[in-house]
Length: 124
Image (cartoon, rainbow, N blue to C red; front, side, top):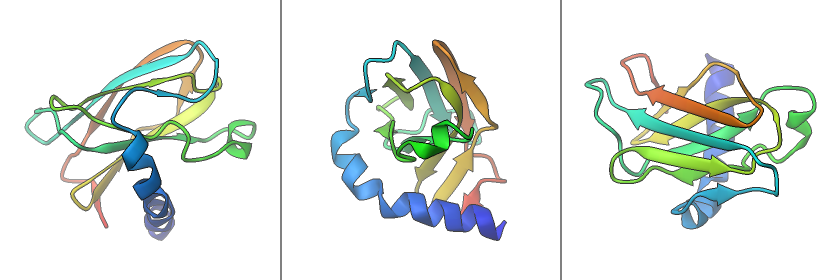
């Protein structure tokens, strides 16, 4: 739990720079990958203005910028990240003092992600 909170704080430290550039789909490089997703609350409604970060979890991806791929959700809670280098990622959502993380997922070409801000979401 402490490790998760420390990781969240490290992510938060870089969110201000990302937030300004995150209003549109993010293109990291020329990779042909695309991640479409949605952040939902406990009732299943989309959450607007949530920051979503693609956090590399594999050995190769961890050498890359851990904040690459940060985007903000739109009014309906949807987001798109384009151009992530192939690898394994956990998708982290930060909104209103809570952080939620998906399990590790492989990004090869296309991926659809749902991040749920349940009662178990870590408060920071």
